[in-house]
Image 1: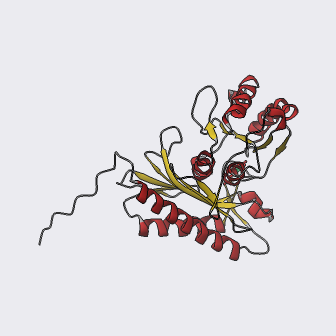
Image 2: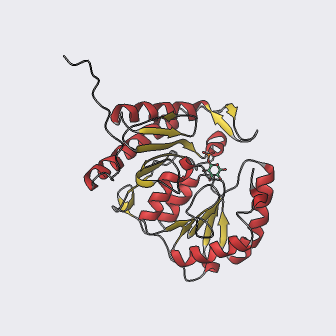
Amino acid sequence: MSTVPAPEPAPSTTLPDDATIAALRALATELATEAGRLVREGRPDRVEVAATKSSAVDPVTAMDRASEELLRERIAAARPHDAILGEEGSDVPGTSGLTWIVDPIDGTVNYLYGVASYAVSVAVVAGPPDPSRWTALAGAVHSVVDGRTWSAARAQGATCDGRPLRVNEPATLSACLVGTGFGYAARVRAHQAQVLTHVLPQVRDIRRLGSAAIDLCLLAEGRLDLYYERGLNPWDLAAGALVAAEAGATVTGLRGEPAGTTMAVAGAAPRVAELARLLEEAGADGPEGDL
Ligand code: LIP
């Protein structure tokens, strides 16, 4: 009987095959849906704030933590060699080269107030949990209140409850309905409001729905034409950005940078180019907007 432990699988330097990626999509969908059921069925009439994070208005609830615990346990059981990164503190190392990136409730303030726009977001990427360096493989976003589930897999398209998705391509920026969001710190919000004065007159209108994951999925199905936001974390972005990209969206940062915390802009390529130029001219990625 050997006492030498079996070697851990080496981190993969190549991407999983299409069938494995499809299976990862199915798992992400199953987990986002299960955690979404927990959040839906377990929501008390009056939600209490358990803690705050970046500011006094950046809440964490007991359900954020319970949803992330469920996701962490299910992923560890199904994919024991994968890493896990979660908004509420999960930071599980792995050896496979794949990382699961989860937001247990994206739109926590909406969950707290009972505003019907919050989701569970589950994605799996190859490489580090850094939007500028990862290869997104599969993801799912489950809208908790109405049960819609968007999902996507690399080079395999995006769907909402099985229905294929395609982004809109309005002819002009002035015809675009634009989703966006704002940070939790007053200094950041002041700068974002200033940038908004440059954007709002140039577009059809703005929608601030409160969940980046849902914003990006609505973009994927043509219910928004563009989306931009500064300050997103990897868990806000990972699944929704893949759904949008697989529905034909360009997802990028400013000044030729990839999408990430500094800025994420998404939509049909010609309109993204126009909005990105407008945001660059407005200094949307400037230091005034740093925490
Ligand atoms: C939310 C993002 C949203 C942003 C909110 C908040 P959270 O994530 O999805 O786009 O505008 O301020 O950051 O904190 O609810 O997981």
